[in-house]
Image 1 (tube, rainbow, N blue to C red):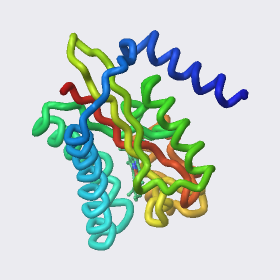
Image 2 (image 1 turned 45 degrees about the vertical axis):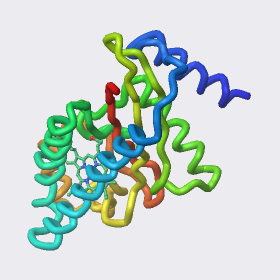
Image 3 (image 1 turned 180 degrees about the vertical axis):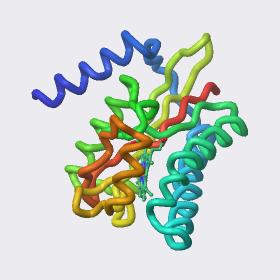
Length: 194
Ligand code: HEC
């Protein structure tokens, strides 16, 4: 009961503040599949680049992949598609990656679905909203924490000193630590007029 109230409040707030009212227009399967594919592309490109850099030059050096390359990949995908493509965190490292109200509500449902046993790999949610007089898809795809991620997002003991120093210098307000493997870390988020 309490859960329901908080959840509907999330959607209520999303509808009243940052986002325009959610329309009841549905989205066709092709639009959805294209959007999903771009979200997956962001995750896989980033994961592969990160793995390669860690193997070649170590974790501290790979911070550059997340600090510079991650926003670049997202920007390049946004440019190619003319959509807004990005990442948000349940606790953000970069303050630019804080979820808006709709995204916050999406993360909340992801955490609840995970608690029911659903896997993050296929987990997504979306709504159709009216933005600038155009139907717009608001889309989120869950990102779970994998073993390699703890080197930069895990418990204090799992993060080496040189990595801590570098993260602290780049992100003085870092909240994206103390995550455990299998926990919801955030989401790929896309805003797409169609
Ligand atoms: C080498 C260190 C490093 C590793 C390993 C790493 N991250 Fe990150 N992560 C970062 C940094 C730095 C940022 C901030 C990026 C920015 O400024 O946009 C970040 C940001 C994020 C964000 C965006 C939200 C936020 O907090 O700003 C998500 C989501 C995320 N990481 C998920 C993951 C996942 C999942 C993994 C494992 C597959 C992972 N990260 C591995 C360093 C790392």
